Image (cartoon, rainbow, N blue to C red):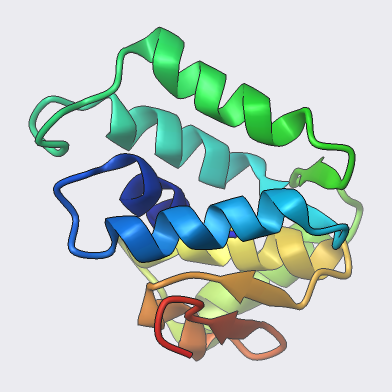
Length: 142
């Protein structure tokens, strides 16, 4: 799952708030395994508490609590870039697709997913469509 869905779920001013909240709640209630890449968690914490980005930023305590609640679910797992295959996958994604700037965090997420055998990301960010081997699903419209 990408940070944008989590951010929409906590941002009551977002036009996607209700849909994202319902989606996150359905994930929490399902028995399907949900993976969170550490860069997604970091992005949520950074953006949700940022006064210049969020109209009503969360306190650090609240933002950490939101993530903590998700990570306490029995079917939630975190994945990181410590896998042996990560660097090769990541390097190829950057060089083959000629990525730069804001595309780098997406490449980190996709390389982490691929290194851990995770093939689907739920996101509103269509930039993930550029990555081969990763299926980007927009649960708010798809």
